[in-house]
Length: 207
Image (cartoon, rainbow, N blue to C red):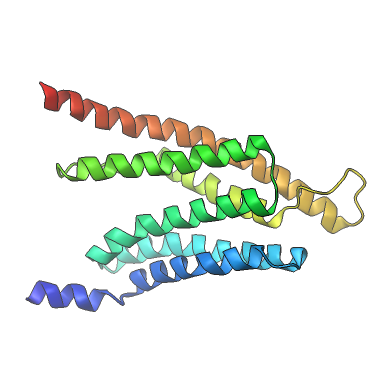
């Protein structure tokens, strides 16, 4: 009973509140990117995405610092991250009409997240954890910076820039594509690492 009450009190602990905020920001970014004012909507959406990304860092940091762990936090934190990345990538593909290459990179990232989630769920049934590697953290960092650049950038500026803002946003978008490529490579590599762990366990279980 005491443990149940403790978990209930942790429901509104600061790390969990930050996770809730991250989830609530997703539909806000979605709506803003579909608004008519492209310049301001991109800036506001990028700011909100940056805010959501920062909460991703601080909810984990505060959980460790304050020694606050809860079942709802363990459940929602990884889901919130995947919802944020997958939803915004899909919206960017649709609203900015990005090319086939960028769409393939976005698809690779989304497919990997689904695949690794499946592996974690499978191994979780046997109480086997897949710790997040340092490379996976670099993957997440490059992924978040890539999406922020793609939100703020503008892919539809021709080579004759009309203003500094055009020049800036076009080059930010190019930087976003480069970061998305790096994130995709790291995504495949870390996905392979997780797959190796899972398949090794499956092989050991057979024997």
